[in-house]
Length: 368
Image 1: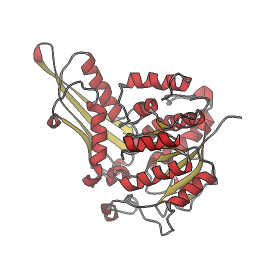
Image 2 (image 1 turned 90 degrees about the vertical axis):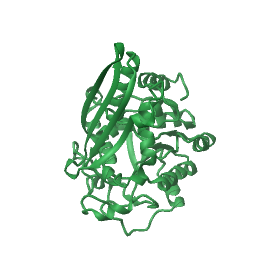
Image 3 (image 1 turned 135 degrees about the vertical axis):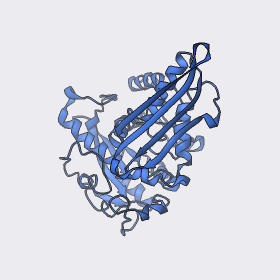
Image 4 (image 1 turned 45 degrees about the vertical axis):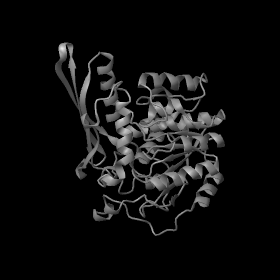
């Protein structure tokens, strides 16, 4: 009988929908037909060994429903690639709102925005009790960008419940030395911050930047412009919520440039919400440099992806690595998988080095 990863989800949105669908999609495919996955086996854990045991959300169309139904409820709009997710026997609980809903969200049509449930919110002690009762191994945090207090609320719950924490959004927790020390002191693994999609704008931009650096082409300026139609992009129309997101995305790219090109010469971040794109994300990337003799050159790329499955492709590895670390009694920030699957890890590494670190971690050759 295969081992299981008992997963709790905070935020049953598009990313959670893709993740849950993927678990059952790969279960049906079987081990011989696993494609679209970076690591098919992590310490004996396959993609379909993840079991959902608890979930929280704040939307009235999800709270109280079985997770198998909630993942297809509005305002979710991601591609349905596996519609036959079985009843899981896990009802979505009402989460703590705190700063999880931006004020401007109430100004948009109901099928595009959040509708706050009238159910009673779970307090910290409720979340901790549920995590313990269901025997959760790992919690993944999908609260909206800018939900600083809400993200820390669930991180605190993990510390109190002894549950590994995967922070898929850009509040700096795992990469914050003070929080990192808390997880290390409690012997609890943590992966973060801000999920780096399997093949998204950040990893593509990083790869191109690394190519310029490796080939001796000085970089003069660069931008990355992103837009999409899901609730994540709608939420990010409130620019005050984007401080950590912009830092996260920018540092993910500039960390590979071994010199300062000046803040005015690098622009990375979300730019707009286009409703009819739904969960499709479009990114335009441009890098300008100078090759031999100081002669100007540039590269322009357009990337078009379904945003949430792209995220799930990294999350499914981060979750299993967190569980593997828990099995091995490794606490604190997990450097290798954070560097490989997150935009703002505790320490940045070039992606090919981070991948090798993950392989070594899986093999048991390095603690983190």
